View 1: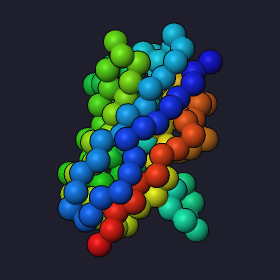
View 2: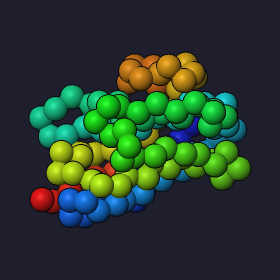
View 3: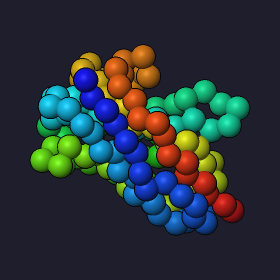
View 4: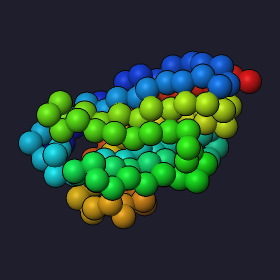
Length: 124
C-alpha cells in the first residue's frame, strides 16, 4: 500500500515557476514508477510526466517538454515536479500517482495509487 500527498501548488503569473512535491508512505516507493497527471476544469485528466523507479527514465507530455522537470529522491520517499515558464493553460489540479508498470506508464489506468491533488493556477 502506498499513500501519496502532494504539496506545492498555488498561484503564479504566466512565466512563473512552482515546484510540486509528492510525499509517499510505504516501503514500495523506491520500486514504483512515479507519474504526474493534471486535470483542468471540464477536461479529462492528462499525463504530464513520469520517472522510473531508479530515475533513469523520464517521459514528458509534449505540452510541457522543456519547461517541466521531474525528479525523485528515494531516500526521502518523495517525487518532484519543477514547473518553469508556466502558462495559463497549465492551470489544473495536479495529481501524483504510483505505478508498477514501469517507464511506459503514460495512461492513468496503469497507476495503482493516487494523491488527492494540488491546485495550480496560472494567470495571464
